[in-house]
Length: 309
Image 1 (cartoon, rainbow, N blue to C red):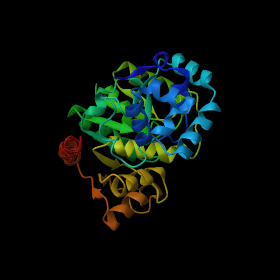
Image 2: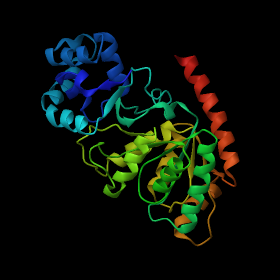
Image 3: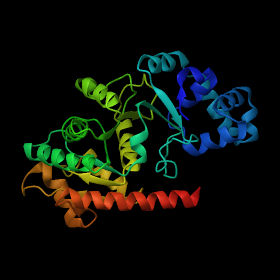
Image 4: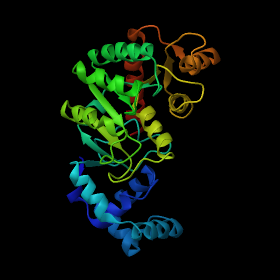
C-alpha cells in the first residue's frame, strides 16, 4: 500500500521528515510497533528504547521534536503527493536491499513502471545535438520494448529521455534532488505534470517542501541507479554527476553500465570514452543490446530479491 499524507499522524510525519532516516531503521520500528503511526508515537513517548539502542532512540526523538510538521503536510497536500514506505509491498523492490536505502519515497503519479525492467539514462546538462539525438533514439526503443526510462529530471540528456518516453507512450520515472512541490529545474514543471498525467511517476526521498541542495543530488543519483536494471551514459564530462551515477551503479549496486561513444576531443564525450577505456562500462552501439541486458538483469535481480525475502 501507499499512504496519503492525511493517513499519517503528526509524530509519524515528523519521523519521516528526518533527513537521512534509513530504511533498515524504519523497518525495525514499524515492525516492532505495528505500524508507522504507532512507530512515531512510540518514539515520542520514549517506548522505542525497547527496540533501538537508547542513544539512537533519543536522537530520533530529539530530531522529531524539532521538525515542523505543518509545512510537510501542506506541501504534500498541495501537489497530491503520496508516500510509500520501505515496509510497503509497493516500495520499489530493488531499492530495499541496497546500502543507504531511504526509509520512504514521496511520489506523484503511478509506481507501476518501477516494477518493470528499466534503463537509467544519464548525461550532461550542457549536451550537444548529437547527445540529444542519441538519448532520443535509445529512449524511444527502450519504451517501445515496454521498459521504463529512469532519469533525474535535469536539463539536457535527462529531459530528452523523459520527453521521448512520454512522446512514444512509454513509462518514465523522474527522481528529484528536491521535494515534489519545489520543481527543479523550474522550467520542467510542465514536463513533470505531463509525466504524471501519462502514468509515469515523480519520486523523491525528501519531504515535499524541501528545496534542492548540492548534497541532495548524489543521493538522487543513488536512487536513479538503484531503480535501474542497467545504466546508460549518453554524454558526460570527466567530472560529472552522470559519471557519479554510473560509478555508484557499478561499485555499490552491481549494475551493468553502458556508454555511448562520442567524438574524440569533445569535452562532453570525454567521460564516456574514459570509462570505456578503463573497462568498467560497455560500449552502447544499438538500443537492442541495452534492452536485452536490462531484461536479463531485471530477471536476475527479481530472482535474487525473491530468494532473500
